[in-house]
Amino acid sequence: MPNSQKSNYKDGDSYTRKSREEGYRSRASFKLKEINSKESLLNKGMSVLDLGSFPGGWTQVSKECVGNRGKVVGVDIKEIVKINECLFIHKSIDKLTKEDFNKFEPILPFDLVLSDMAPNISGIRERDNAQMIYLIDKTLFAIDAFLKVGGSAVIKVFQGESLDYTREALIDRFKKIKVFKPKSSRSNSKETYIIGKKLVKENE
Ligand SMILES: C[S@@+](CC[C@H](N)C(=O)[O-])C[C@H]1O[C@@H](n2cnc3c(N)ncnc32)[C@H](O)[C@@H]1O
Image 1 (spheres, rainbow, N blue to C red):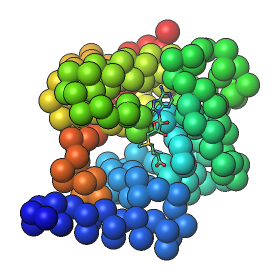
Image 2 (image 1 turned 180 degrees about the horizontal axis):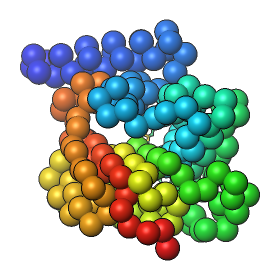
Image 3 (image 1 turned 90 degrees about the vertical axis):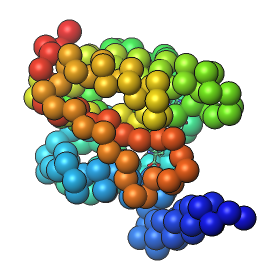
């Protein structure tokens, strides 16, 4: 096995072990922790929309940060095992409508929208990029509909086409945009994250 691959597996194992030891449902938890320690996005009392929330690592980290007064709503096509005091919509983002959020009216609009969604990777670059861009468009719909003016967003993208596409879409919406790849993201993975701070566009 080449050295670069060996070190990737080693990294992966250490974060997976650490997530089990610390009671997180996924190694992805550490990606959000790193993003948050760099950008200070999660604060006490906030409301957070977590798109692609299964198995729940980002939901756990978000809930820890927003505390008792804060609210976290997860959305995933896969059914999640409930996390205390967190809310879930078990649905594909395709099918998400404004009516799904009627019952969350008191906590709308959200302070922060997170998306860690990714398509099933086929290995066919054009197809994977097209599917990622489709999920990003749905995330942009959620941002336009449910994020408060002044709020922030974190969106998983693939380096290349979907990163360029998302950066362009966020320039019109946010005052500040940053791209950040956490150390806990495998170095051989194309994923990276775009952070948009201070939404300037009025909610529709
Ligand atoms: C990398 S995982 C998220 C891990 C999660 N952030 C955590 O910390 O545990 C990506 C998730 O996106 C979800 N997903 C993919 N396509 C989706 C869609 N169309 N609607 C809702 N969720 C979707 C998958 O079901 C999967 O659970």
